[in-house]
Image (tube, rainbow, N blue to C red):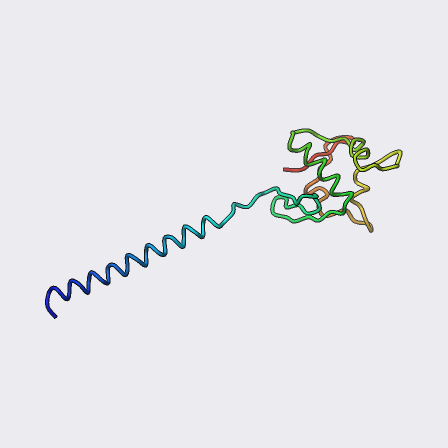
Length: 128
């Protein structure tokens, strides 16, 4: 094999390696672009499904309405009184307690105290 043929073969091999590295770089870039940074707090449109600090919670319609009210208060850095929530959900109870909406069959909803926090008499917020 003469010198010119050997250089050409070496050049072809180098070009092949360089092309493979370029393709790998593009694949890696596409992979990272496709990765969405996980959100610590997110919800669906109706608040019936919520992702909160790595946990997924599902809520019935009344609970979802409550979560929406608490979420809005949390976004505004405000606490929400359970009387306000009672009005929002349209309860006929004269003495409403928020916890009653999250207590069923002798157990609290998994989001209780993980996501929902009582911070004073009748005052609630979302834990962060």
